[in-house]
Amino acid sequence: FRSIQGAVIGQRGYCLTNREDYLSPFNKALQNLASEEDAFDTLARDNPAQREDAHICKQLVAEKIAEMSQTIQLQRQKGPEQALALVLTDRGKTIMDELQLRMARMENRETAALDRRAANVTLQAQYAGLVTIFATLVLFVLLLIANRKLHREKLQAIAANHAKSSFLANMSHELRTPLNAIIGYSEMLQEEAQDGGQTDFLPDLNRIQTAGKQLLALINSILDLSKIEAGKMDLYLESFSVASLVREISTIIAPVAEKSGNQFDVVCSAETGSMHTDQTKLRQAIINLLSNACKFTANGTVSLAVSRDLSGPSPQMIFTIRDTGIGMTSEQVQKVFEPFTQADASTTRKFGGTGLGLAISQRFVAMLGGYISVSSEPNHGSEFTIAVPVSIGEITTNTLVTPSPGIPTSGVVLAIDDDPTVHDLLRRTLSKHGLAV
Image (cartoon, rainbow, N blue to C red; front, side):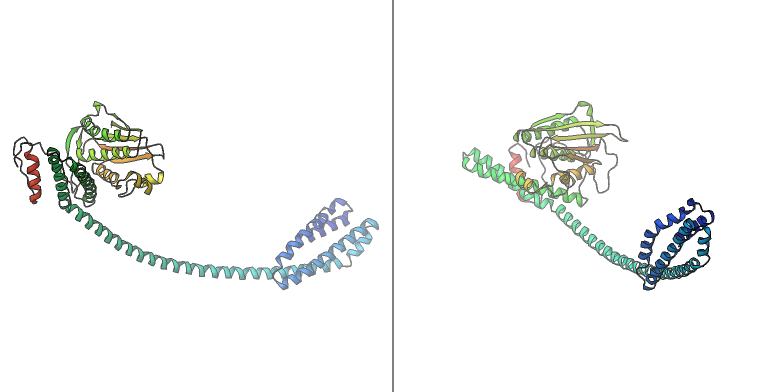
């Protein structure tokens, strides 16, 4: 309707002034009408009454354009008087009044339709809001029930795990004693077979002893882990030289490294000084990591570097274990400290092991107030770093501080045990060294 009004204004300006430039709005309106009529049809498409009025409006627009074009032609050809005579017939005014009436009716219909749609949207939104609130409440109740169930199951699992750990921790004596007897008697039988010239028995006795030691090592690892989880693992604090500790570890690891064709390097200066902590647990953690490095490296290099870190609030001793072995993926690194977990099935078959060494090492180091970090790449080796306080100032609960036992200097040993087999084994073993039991 605005385009037609613009055309009318341009046509009247031309008729009054006879200047062609006044026809610019008229020409522009003619250019825009085609696209505006298409949009008009699209808006009226979904309503029959609107479609009918839209069709009539298009006819009226065509009639009005024809009337204005005739007026302009008369102005150009016969002069203003002929053009004014056509305007005074009110034909154009009648068309515009009818067009305006129908356009207003269509606009009122569209406004009413929009109001109905807005009301429907509001009702739907309110309904959707109520449904959402109800669904949220139902979900909250379900989650609450599920959380309570999970909490109960978690407490039951913790209690069961604690009972298991307590049982294994209390079974330490009963499990270790028979194995120690098997190992001890196999050693004595080996010596007696060697002395008696019965060398045919030596390979079988050696297999018995080896199997017993492997089983004892496995049981020791399981029991150590269970005692830690049960809170029954004690700390025995003492002061010792770090260089001396490293020499002891090197004596144990050097033959293990040579067995796989590895070079074993140690870097530890005398300036590392001493530590005050549980030497046994620290030694075991380092040996576990070095043994792993030797196991997963062949014809390569395994190294241990020791340094003292004074940058933090309290001094720390840093033990870095590197190897040039098979390495690990990022997924394997994430689970490397989980109990009974190894890299994958093929690694377990090839290298053996129980997957307890690193788990126990991590827990030992945590008991000493430190941590273990690891970085690794497949086929590029691994690096484990142990960082522990140089001195433990405060001991956590469930921890007993006991000085290390001294070495007996007399010729009599007091053996306290409730198993006569242990008495006999100790007596027969120690009597060979001139000690009375």
